[in-house]
Amino acid sequence: MPKRIQVTRTGGPDVLGLVDAAPVAPARGEVRVKNQAIGLNFIDIYMRSGLYQLPSLPSGLGSEGAGFVDAVGDGVTHLAVGDRVAYAQGPQGAYAHYHTLPADNVVVLPDTVSFDTAAACMLKGLTTQYLLRQTYPLQGGETILWHAAAGGVGSIACQWAKALGVRLIGTVSSPEKAELALGNGASDIIDYSQENVVERVRELTNGEMCDVVYDSVGKDTWETSLDCLKPRSLMVSFGNASGAVEGVNLGILNQKGSLFVTRPSLNGYADTRERLESMANELFAMLSSGKVSIDIAQRYPLAEAGEAQRALAERRTTGSTILLP
Image (cartoon, rainbow, N blue to C red; front, side, top):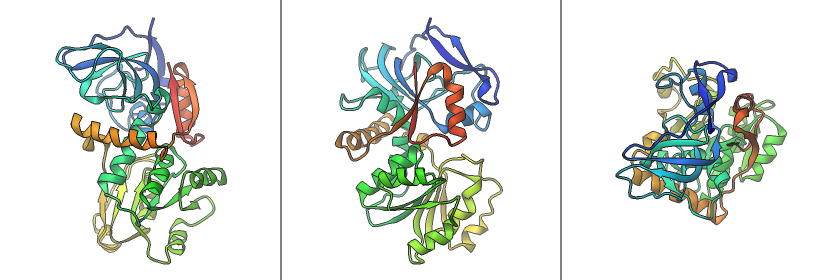
């Protein structure tokens, strides 16, 4: 019997249960994917813990995976049974052997990209694409600060920024992670467990500071991030690894140099099938060219999804983690 991870209440990793789950027939405009690999992301933890609200309970979990199209609903013309595909947008339920979802959220996967690679990087890679190419269209020559540069998104961003000719200063928590980020193309690394981030950015930039700060950490780094920016530059807050940024006084943006701030999401950029396909094609081109490679540092069986999430939350992982059904 096929299985899925199910959540009956929000809480810690122990609320994840492996249950029998018959494949759901696709309705009009939907397809069913037989997963070959499943992505693990911080947003899954936010959903499980209740930081982000699940539509209803009990619920499946996860939004990213890759596999074969197993069934096609009425009205779907761009996908066919047997197609190699990948996806990174809802509904929740990717932690499963089979996942039924809107066909417009699914893209054809080229033969040059493996299922494991796609599952490990669709959400992170598309996130990197909109951050570097749309939220702030980097042209080359800019200096940016990237928190958690050895993480899943950070590992891709270091490589992509290097390919664009952008100077990426990354923050990490250990010498091992510093080595990893430098190997991926970061220009400079700051170990925030040993160094003052703002002071080091000032030293590294000769006082000029950064054009953009990309911050997926959230509450713990909010003030530090603002202090690393040039006047009239952009703060991009795209995650809450340490907790949500709350109680923001907009006046602080004025005090620190007429700063801009944005809180983007993948759904806000990949909001049509055409835009999603365009973004995915750019990601697949970067992967196929070798300019970006994906380090799958952890693989867990689907039944151990709770332990995989625990490792991610405790920052014991590097690169990307996937679940295998």
